[in-house]
Image (tube, rainbow, N blue to C red; front, top):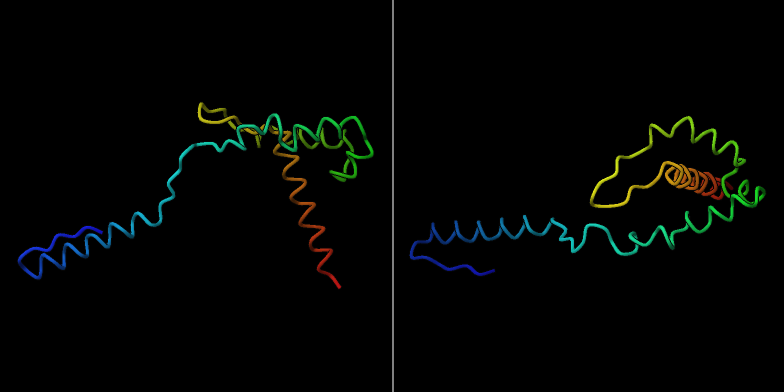
Length: 121
């Protein structure tokens, strides 16, 4: 902190307070180097959804084990909520498709259910 002291004590106090306030304002801000991290840029090639979903759709038993519903039920749920969970595309990043959003949501909810079951004695 570079503070130049003046001839009067009142001015010194004001300068010190102003410098401290400026430091506090900068502490809470996150400085981003990029808008979308490189890991997220490559999710279409290497992400779990894009690599695993193709395999799950070919194996109905595994699909059911992963989502606890049939592929037909998944598509029906998706058709009911697709318009509600669809996001508009932007120039800054690639949007997450409604089917991927549903898959993420279902896996998250299943994880919560299994964690609650594990807590019971």
